[in-house]
Length: 455
Image: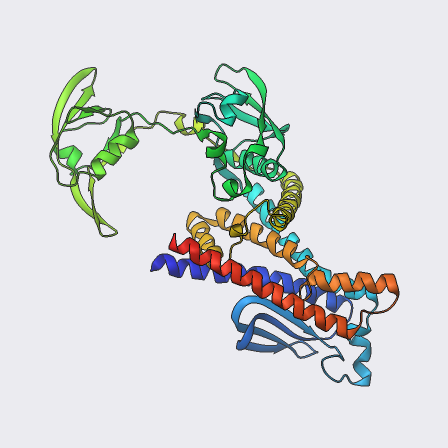
C-alpha cells in the first residue's frame, strides 16, 4: 500500500512539474509578445485551486485531472474581444509570434531535460564499471570475441565509464540495426576493438530490458569472500563464538563460495541449527549456529549479526563516480537530450512501419510505477526519470497531429506558404481526427498497462 501511495505521489509531482514547465513556455513567450493571458491551468476538468494574479487578472488553476494543462489566451474565435484589447489578441499577432508561442511549450520540455541532465552530470552518479561477466557460448558477444573480465572503455570512440553509458550507446545502435564498435581492455592492460552486430537484436527485446542477455553477456558479479568483518555483540554469530576475519568454508557439509551465498543460507534458515566450518588463522574450526528469527514483510528470515569484510579498494575496483565540470555537463546534457529525442522519434517510426511492437507504449499506470521506483532510489534517479519523460513530452507534442502543438505548427507553415490561414472547417475536421487518434493511443497505452499489471 505504501509503494502504491509513493508511486502516486511521485507521479503527481513529476507530471505536475513537467506540465507546469511546458505551459510556462507558452505563457512566457505569449507575455513577451504582449498577448493577454486569461487562464494558466495545470490539469483539466473541475478546478481544485484557483488564484487570480497580475494586472490582466489571469486565473491560475490546478484542476482535478493532472494529465495535461493549457494556457488560455485572448482570442476572438472563442469570445468577444473589446476594441481596446484587440491588439493583445493571440489571433491578431504576426505569424512568427504565434509560431513562437506554440513552439515554446515543447522547447521548454527540452530545456528542462537539459537542466536535469546537467545537474545529474555535475552532481555525479556512482555507476558500476562496464566489466564483462559471463559470456554465453555461441552468442553475438562470443562470436565478436568478447571475453569475461574485459572492461568496455569506449563505444564508437565515446568513453563509457559505466554500464549505463554503454547501454545508452548500444540502445541507439539497436534501433538503427547496425554495427557498433567496442574498445575493451583486459586485466593485463591489452586493448582491442571488437564489433557487435546489433541488427540481430529486436527493439522489443531491448524494450523488455533484455539487451545484454540477447547479446549474450552479463554484468560482472561483485563477489565478496565469505569472510566476517565485524561481529555484533549479542547476535547469533557472537553467541556461536564466531570472530572477525573468520572465513566460512561450509555449512552442513555444503561448500560456501561467496558472501552472497552465505547471506542467502542464513536468510533461509531462521531458527534452524546449522554446523558451520570456519577457517580461523589457517586453522579449521567448527561452530553450531542458530540464526535468529526476524519477520520482514510478513516473512520469517534469519539473521546472525555479522557484517562482511570488505578488502581495501574492493568497491573502487567495481564502481566509479561519473561527474563533470559545469561547462562539460551542459554540453553532455545537450547531447544526451538530442540523442534521446532522436531515439524517441526513431522508435515511434519503427512502430509505424511494424518493426517495433506497440506494446512498448506506456500509459499513466506504468509511468507512475517508474516514478515511484526512481523516487525510492534517490534524487538522481528521479531527475533522470523526469528528464526522459520531459523529452518524450517534447517530441510527442511536436508530432504533426491536430490538437497537439505540432499540429498547430503545421497550420502555421501552411499559412506561411499560401499566404492565408487554414480554413476553420479544415481545422475543425483536423481537431476531430486528432481527438480520435489521441484517444486511440491513450486507450492502447492503458491496455498495455493493464496487461503488464496482470503479468
